[in-house]
Image (tube, rainbow, N blue to C red; front, side, top):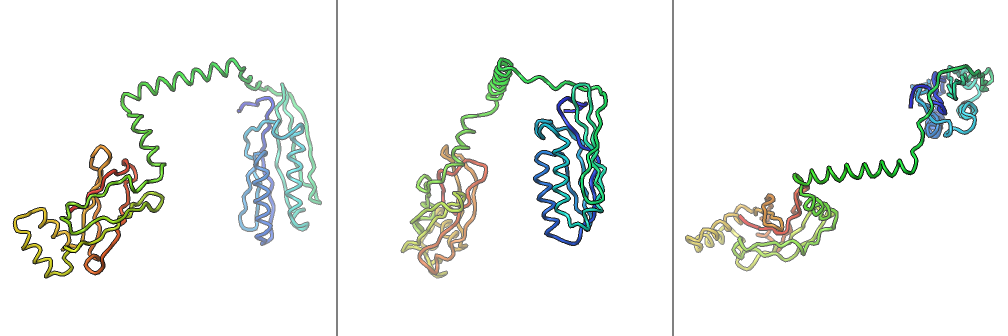
Length: 300
């Protein structure tokens, strides 16, 4: 609201003064300012040993301050001054003023800080050109406005549905807020030619990570010599040779697919520890934006 709207009040000017080097007092002033700002358009600034309280010159409704806005402002200032030590309180000064707008009137009030730290309120009423506040909507108008908004939203939805798959969008959102069930994700290690098998799955880190436990089989080559023998035995069996090369490097590739078998991406994970112990675990971080994987393929 602006333009001297009837039933509103504005604050202008400031209150300023000095502070002793007291952090507790500064904290009390900030707390008071937060409480006062709930109703009054005032902002507090503390700079070293100096404070200033500024009227923000924006309208607020008189109804928020009670029947007498000037008294509400004066009471707030008295609370502020009561927080200050007596030797500091008397040195504070004020140029704060308020303007309350009534029908064809402006009530001008200034708030002067007296020698003893009291608040002296001086007021006058002058003729002014004011603006009537907007009339509140009737029930019929609110219903009409709501139906209009609903119609516009429906039209936007119908037009945008040509370009946006809302069913998939909703499905993805529901999927994201639903805790991950590890049993809903199939993990296929068949491309590792029987050297490694999956023995467990767990969802961790708020369902953002799938922990996959792997176990080596009896055929797993645990030494370089065993790897050379296995490669030689594989002969022209290319998939088996590639699986053995992955074991030699100590890394496997985890490829992720959604429920429609669409490729989502891949990550590489270290499994070289299987040479020295029977099991290991890899932590597969799931895509942040894409649909959750429904199938994981461990491959070379």
